[in-house]
Length: 276
Figure 1: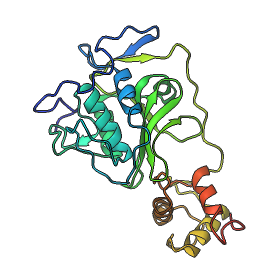
Figure 2 (figure 1 turned 45 degrees about the vertical axis):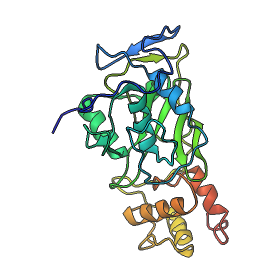
Figure 3 (figure 1 turned 180 degrees about the vertical axis):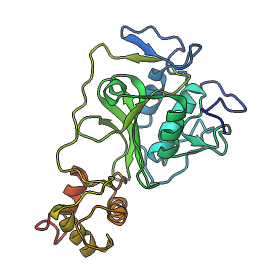
């Protein structure tokens, strides 16, 4: 197995020359893992921004070689399609060499970024146009990935409720940033400091989280028909799966994590407000 993604068997030049390949920037050049790179992170952001408002469907496949695709998207397919169409590089997909069969997944993004030494700090990625911000999937489930606009904002295929949006980095949990090998990146003039998520986020960890709040969450999920397994106050794989199922059924980001958005949606459900 290759240790890092390579260019497709049939290289295709950037389909959307939104920005010239050599871009004059007032901001500072950051880095590239390929000294010969000419495609830029700015081109990724510009292309992604053209698709704001399009539909999201969890698990949707985006044909990487189809220049005219306008959704539906899921988060990883959107990120990989934008990178490929703007730069000609396949990343975060398997198989890694064939745009006709390539399937994107947040887990592939994590694996390939590690192999390529392409992971960077979240704060750094938030200030770099075209960098990616990744929340890794837990237990083989669904994570989330977004494109940084370099100013603390994102372009992302968010959820079935919202579709493709211009979002923000602050107040959300991220595991790492990613700089795709073969892309030239530039940092914004002003550094970006990412605010952490609010206290009280619950997710699958090792060791597993325990507490009365988790027990109340399990009671609420069970009452709504989302089976969390034994209602024991432990945030284990079954509780994570029940949270993810609730998120999918209610048009939220499906990551199995109990954060502010999921808590708000659950509290709006009949019988759950007093439990949570």
